[in-house]
Image (cartoon, rainbow, N blue to C red; front, side):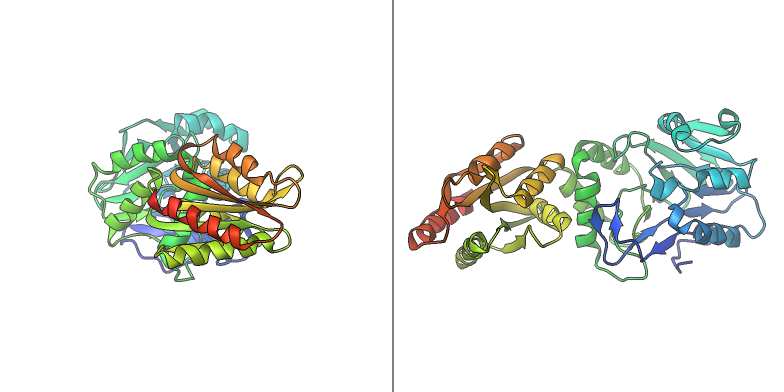
Length: 388
């Protein structure tokens, strides 16, 4: 069990997973991930969520250690996604007198995952503002639909001023790695929750009414200090506001000629004082590329034409941006083609499905390899982009 310390009464019983290669079967996690779960020990005992099946035995052992022979009265179910809910039936079967505390939507969805005997009798369905007395501790429930599933709720423990934030304020990376929070939290938020900015803003408004001294998420570290920093980041990310004034140059090149033009664009932009990050969409982590597109205020897309459209890595990138509600950015286009350049048209067609994008009027269209005239066009394009 991790040596995470919350308080004398609130215990951490989660587990690190350092061997999983892809989170949700698509996001690279070189430093793994933590599955967090907690126990509130009082006159009544509440277990706060379970964890992924991959670490079920370790979690159960951690729980038994903390219980020290006592029996939990409640299992609070914040979120039914399997990385947090896989052991619900196991715990329910092990402690048949324990009640399940959950939202109405979670109760309706629960039988889709598990066959739990006498489910109606065992469930305590809670709604917005309901409270659960544990003794000296009291849980207050706040519904958080579509953050990022419809059944989600968060819990505020009033005595110790702890917010159990479900997937909110989570990050990639196992707790045994002392990673800086922001980059992996941003990559986690944008790719997992990013589509649902409006529901996150609604939840943040609720949180603003509470005196929060500790945030206990379902992934990543427990947050106890400088909470305003983390909340401000979530306000920025969920409002789709650029986090930094800078440029991401995203390139999808087949044989290297488009990459050469993209790298030249990086050089031009830097010469004009811009903060620039480059990503090769054919090789770099796509989730990080998406995260950086949201991080910066401007985006340059440089892609080869392919099959009367755009090279698939760029198409994939743009579709991912669309799925995550990409908006409020300035965008510049560079295309390459040997006989019928068409990448820009295809990129613009996808961009046009997004809202509040300021697309540069100029487009640089390269024929096979970059020429001096193309460089001059890129200088003009850089000027137009940086003026936006």
